[in-house]
Length: 173
Image (cartoon, rainbow, N blue to C red; front, side, top):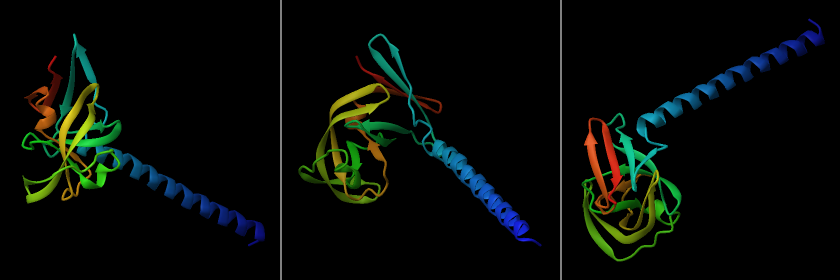
């Protein structure tokens, strides 16, 4: 075999490796997107307008939860709708990034027991075109997930109805 044949075989080998790596990366990209849609099927919530009311429809995820991408103080977050939570609950790991400051400490009863939380207020909370202002919240150092619990301090400012696998959020005015 000549030196040119060895170079050709080496180049062909590297092209084959590059093709496999590219195919693998493409599969990871496609399947991670499909997995994300199973966890959060509402990553881009659409708003509908009827008069001065705004409506956002949320679809349940595979686990039967309502998860939606929104924003706190114009910074994107993922909300998990929790009608059993009195206030919006923000993981402590996100609080600084969202511009939230710790207020008075208090105790909260959670699914994981009683925890110390810190009162705060969210200046602006958005889901689609629905925007709420001055929402009571707490900063929870015990929350390990990156999801913000969308509790009743926000939901009570909206009309919400569940129909089948859809949760309909609507402004009150």
